[in-house]
Length: 426
Image (cartoon, rainbow, N blue to C red; front, side, top):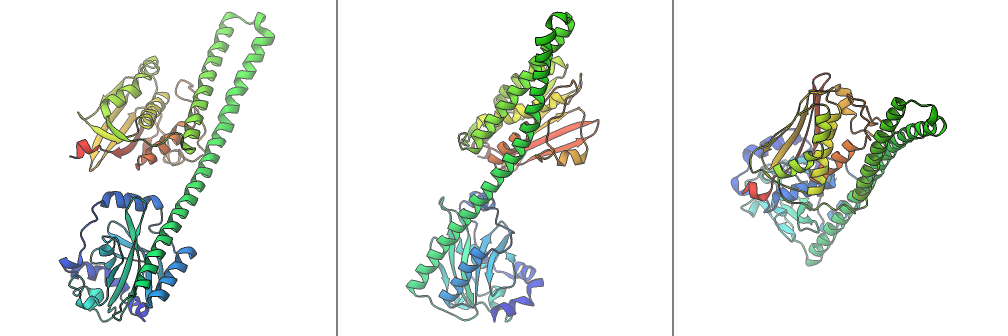
């Protein structure tokens, strides 16, 4: 059996293939390789274990094609991941030299009736090695609604074979069923993430909204019952507290509204070419007064003429939140710096402060809703606790990541990456 033959060569097959494949065996990259890999990552299936709904389809492929083995192969940047496999013991293989890397370049089923007679594969170790002796391969690409091939559902055998029109048509139908199952899987994962985010947000709201109203109600009661007996200084302090609490509550509701719009699809991701310096200036402008009250200069160091590809509203809110957070946790006469760095096809934007800093454990818990409750700033400023969770979601909408580096007493650096615009890349 083919599966038995593969078992004892698995420890060295990948390195052997990489050193032995001919140029003809190495398929060119897909015309939309970057978009294809991004789409594959969005499904969150690469590297995951087999699942019954996929196993059933792959087993059916082997039966219909009369092959000894069958695979659901996801084609990554350097690796094939076999999400499901029938009579095949390896869970991955090198992409270079693979049959599947060729199959994703086809719109229809790619059929290799006898690999020993095919100039693309007749020098491939999978074909020439007696332990594997691959002869037959038939692979139908897994194509998304956007026309991007994520991988292949394929039949493999160690004997030459032909396929009937009905077998070919059935394999194409099964490929579409795999994509439908992948879409369903992605929807389920998204709903689970939404529910997790709801739990995080509601936990924060329950804590922060109650705290804000407890203070407002308490001081309002004091004013109502003891107004005439209070000294002017006490009245001013209470008025100041009520004003601050009102602003905090308003910010909480504003963040909650943004999150609700994002989750309900009322805040669609609308990327376009944006000039980074003007975007940053707009986001920082509304925070200069808060920074000035603590004598904190905001230094902006951007490379000239940097254009990014992103959603203006989300990026404005993202930068505004990170700068606001830096002001909150930086003491008087501290410093805040915003700078950028080009990295391949992305720009990394960092907000650095000389503030309180935090431990590595605190940094790791920043985006955990169970711990992400508001913390007072260096002047006792209140926060909503929602800002960083929103920042994380806005960055994810841009297919980027948000990271933090911090040291107690020395400050923090929050960095996120977003795509450069086509104008810069050209």
